[in-house]
Length: 272
Image 1 (tube, rainbow, N blue to C red):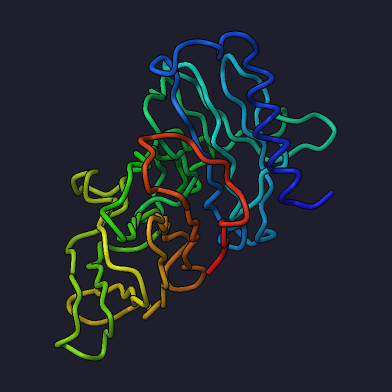
Image 2: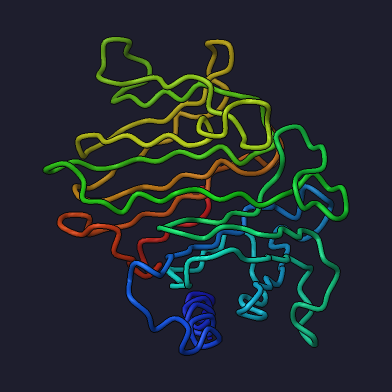
């Protein structure tokens, strides 16, 4: 069985575990995606760092979840959930050593939950082993893009300082069209959590993304070629500079829909 097929079955399994409680009006449902953004190499382990994800009222939702994987969309009743992430145990899923435990996580709307490093490596919320890890919730934007436009969303979930994000047609040409957004920060930093995510629309074609620190480029340029009516989700993960990288996922078909979930499929481009 391919890894992609296994992830699809994982999403189906979550829906099945929810049973009839998920068959309610749409406004009573949240749509959740889950991303594994912790590189095992940060701790001298296998990069994949497989984990199991347990969700209250659901059960062992995602066994064998590996770094870079994304599962979703998963429809769940709006409400508060307890989430536990443990080291994968093939014989007894969700019974391995617990690493992250969060209580009362409010799921509503369309969201992504990502397990990741903290801003400075200090213990984060729910970090049971003081590893400098946590899990954060981000709102997804599945609304239709502007006519012919593409959406780019950048998230800071790395062990790295606050950075500025420059998106440009040509980073080396100061006269090229572009925009610089300052102060993108990890949600565990002292900064405003709203500064952990950038959401902007651009015309399709080639764009470069560069992270800057004190006006100097520190990562990139990373070339993107977004197509019309798509959303490119970028998550900065790992520890800067050793394992720092992007996880990139693309959602297509944002022409007419309003917050309608689309399965994670071949548009997922994975590690960059």
